[in-house]
Length: 189
Image 1 (cartoon, rainbow, N blue to C red):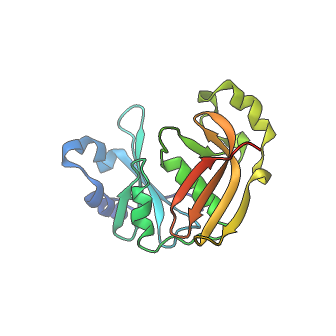
Image 2 (image 1 turned 120 degrees about the vertical axis):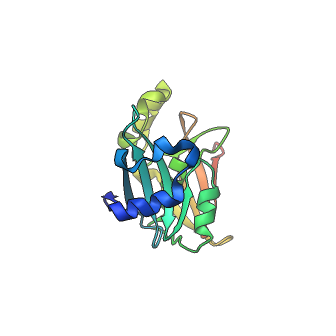
Image 3 (image 1 turned 60 degrees about the vertical axis):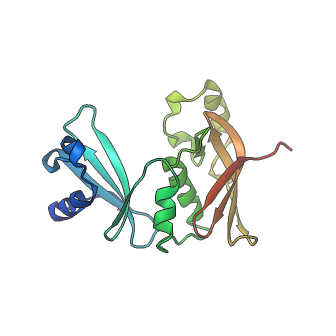
């Protein structure tokens, strides 16, 4: 799905929910662009990006929306848990990788940031990671991602290359049907 701009009415409705009276300059509609994009693993939900173009460099606030229910993506798993509790998540063997990639992009797993290495050539922030990344990335492709059904908790197990704090390593992600995600480094063989 492609990004679509919100209409002026949709933008004003969104603004009623997200505006902050203490930060009024960040939410001036005449200087902001609001776009949304649905995802195949959420029904009746979309990612909304509110971008302020008045401030240099421009910056954005990201939200998940389901009808009138809007949650700010603050780097924690809480927004996902909130939206998933509404029953909007519909993962299957085809969409679970998209969900994991989206989750990793928006949730900071401290103490190390973890990203799914799905396509090494389009990996964001390549210039900011360790030099080893540039040599190691050529050893991986999307074919290295393996999805199996986890019958223990009604979810999926994904074995894949991940970027753990700038270093590539194999990892195991467990994703429940309710959207709970855990990611660990795979034990050396």
